[in-house]
Length: 202
Image 1 (cartoon, rainbow, N blue to C red):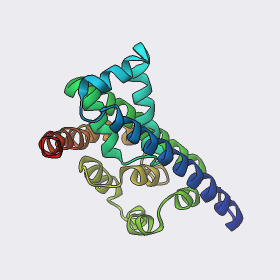
Image 2 (spheres, rainbow, N blue to C red):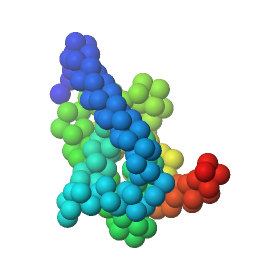
Image 3 (cartoon, rainbow, N blue to C red):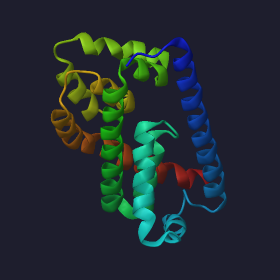
């Protein structure tokens, strides 16, 4: 499915509005979190999530899944939040499940709506940097390596994979095997940084 210039403009407006709203909500939550010490006290964050009862892990995983589809907040914030809220083991598991689900949904969306849709929602500079991968015969290998690395633009790469020749089965296989290392690097790395910096800020 190809999009006209007007349709791309409408899609961009919609995506930008959703992203802006998401960022605004995240910003308000960060302000609230600072006031309530949610980011400096595991007990405070656990108490906040406790208000949602047994649904708190589900709410968190939904947030991470949405974050993998639309960049409503820096990905590292969600990974760190999972570790702080649920501890290193459960936090990692919830991060992993949420991000994997979101990545698969992103793949299916781009497979349904095509490259023009991906271009309409991606940052132009990042899109131009990676779209050339689709023309390379070793795209699957490049994709797998990039997913394994914690610094790659995973959301865009998952969208690009959806318009490549890679099968859904192979994509899911790469995501399931490749995501744990990157998520662990984000989660535990940021947690160590926070533990080092927070005493300096007191």
